[in-house]
Length: 242
Image 1 (cartoon, one colour):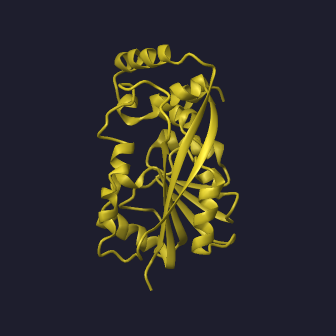
Image 2 (tube, one colour):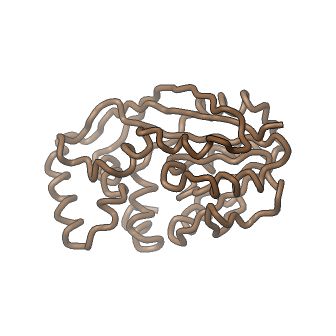
């Protein structure tokens, strides 16, 4: 599908997310999988899966992958792109799975939005004995746009980078978090950079006219057809305590 076809079918936010967000590098995923000792016959859950950026990587590694996403447009696009996964509508506080149904839960670029004791308890409920939890974020190492074009500093990356989300694990049923980071370089088109900006929540939520104006301002700053974007990938993993 073209960008315009995606937007017409699934909504502008979902289309921008799919077009603009970077792909997850194999190295970080494989590292967490190895550390947790997950086998190919495991059942895993991609929670808050969005358009399936992480889901499409997981279906290559595991026999059964479940993707839970509350947004209908995002989930509709996920179902189209990753038909191998079982896509379900659900929320972090009410995951539509039985207790102990999955061997691991993966969350990409989302845990900082809903980190809390209740949410972590619900994640623990659906995990099998000694089940694993993997949390992943990416951070740009270089700016593509000038300062002032990065969206609301109180949201998205700043919220994740603060580390406040780790407080949810204090006194939880999970072992101590472990951490590794990796770097990745991806080449993206000018349209991809613009879509990345359009996908961040402060821009995607604007009224149509204001959003269009902001995107035109950003577009005027992009003077190349392709860009090389460098990312830091942070991967955290843990498992239910014995």
